[in-house]
Image (cartoon, rainbow, N blue to C red):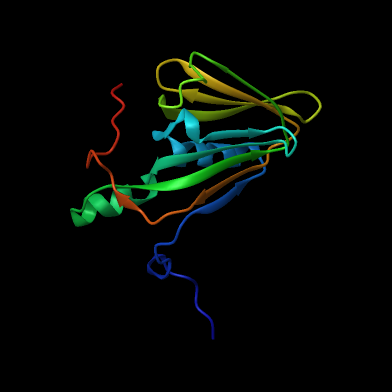
Length: 159
């Protein structure tokens, strides 16, 4: 006899997600909100048609448990990779400053009529990175163990 999986059965594991539709982007955007990364951790490989960033992601999915158990909030290093990218542009940031630290606020997709479209990564301070792509093909993968967030606080967005 088999039983349904229980919430408790889901041991804490690194995230490994793939987005292939517009609904998936909403999930990835929520999980990467407030991720921080230096400009030097972005990579654009035109021959492979891949844009990737190594970011320090706030673990939003762990916040309820951290609050419930009175423990510190966490971040984790993760790779956010966009495949099938044909062009990368940016505005409002100095791409030549490798020490520039960016904070990701959201990821959106603006489809065009032919199935292709544009990703827009909105950054704190009015910066954006735009990625023209043939389709939605994104992966998010945690690559380190979680660590205590240096601020020991969850990001706050006053309304």
